[in-house]
Image (cartoon, rainbow, N blue to C red):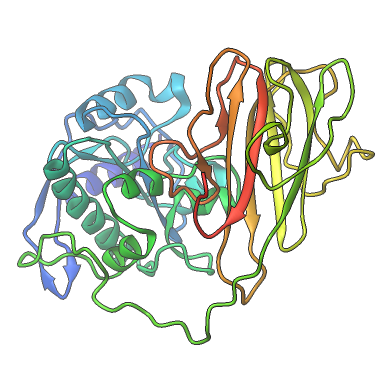
Length: 374
């Protein structure tokens, strides 16, 4: 980092030592702990464009201080750090410098986000409420500060964006922070409302619902969506396709206690994209077609390579009731299904993908609806 950038970085540190929440009234300033801030010779020296503020959750149940300590120590080796970590009862720890690229959500997001914020995860409800208010206010005030809209996950390319939005529209496989927020009863709509308006100093409580619940302009238009899918048994053949799921041997794709190497999925409405993780190759490219005869563009997987993870996203046709893919898997080394996954990150505790890395997948269930039927 050259001298000019060092001076700018130092100025940013001083200017942002505390912030006032803009949300109707000025809220009480929150002190930022700089104990874990990267030095002027650490982190990226590249400036950002001021287009998005990125909202994360840490994905581990650990104190925010521990996360900040880790990012400070391992920022280069791990290739990951953000500007702020919120937690420990509403505290804020700085790691990266505002306005300079962090390494938190891929090259596009990093280049366009002057601020990225991690929310540390806790099982304690009282601690979560304090963390949540601080987290929301930091996202809100950061957007105001950089002239960025406070709308969350809107269809435009500027605003406050979840890591899930980045995954869906740019790159990646993260679904945070929605799974963690849902585990404490905060919906996507609630989060969007709270970030848009912020919490004032006289109202630092998480409301159970948004102040105004929007009414749909048209009646709900839910259409039945059927998903057809099949697995290829390693060293053998394609198995019979399964439609949605039910009980018994016809209720899943795959053969118990067997290894599978290819997968195809197709839907009768909307569209679905999917990919697999194999023990030999890691995550393979996304597939948007479902045709077992087309092993290049219509099938996920590589013949002979064991699948141990599956990820998918369903897109609802415009004008219809929002639905998503709910799916779960089992492995050759465990009894019973693993946790249920949802493609928008609303199933608490288990959202990113189905499977257990290192353990071959032996069966898979999928259905598409507006709520899980498992």
